[in-house]
Length: 211
Image (cartoon, rainbow, N blue to C red):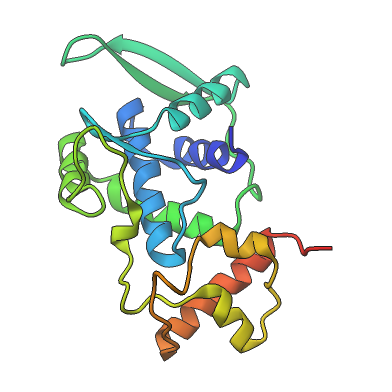
């Protein structure tokens, strides 16, 4: 499983101030992915979400949480669910280690925790269902995050790098954000330039240079 995904889950479990069940954990990771995608046009750890009974769901998140349980960083408690069956509650055992995630990821996670820790379970589900990309998703299908992007403003990152002389020209960077000139318009407005400069700095911090 992705180390980034495990660190994201570990961070949320460490700092989320309320009882955290499996459904809530998945929704918080999903909302962090939504926030990150809006800012950087990619998800935190390339998790795939499927529209299931309680909205977006990913076994990748559940399996990563189980790995943290196996590593004695989390404890999972099974309790009877008010809807029948069992509910899975996560308790923190070993706190998240500072420095595992970069500042851009932490900023999004902090925003999600600060905003949604005051939401009830039903309020959280309502928010997820009534906002993109869930809003127009079809049950049983994978959720397409590309609806979050304004195609009239999104620029081609690789071309922007070439135009501005930034040094992220290797293929890993281009693939990591999955942009192409054929899909999106090229726009170098002041705001978009600032956003791409921020993205460029972040990409340079996590992607090694090519030989």
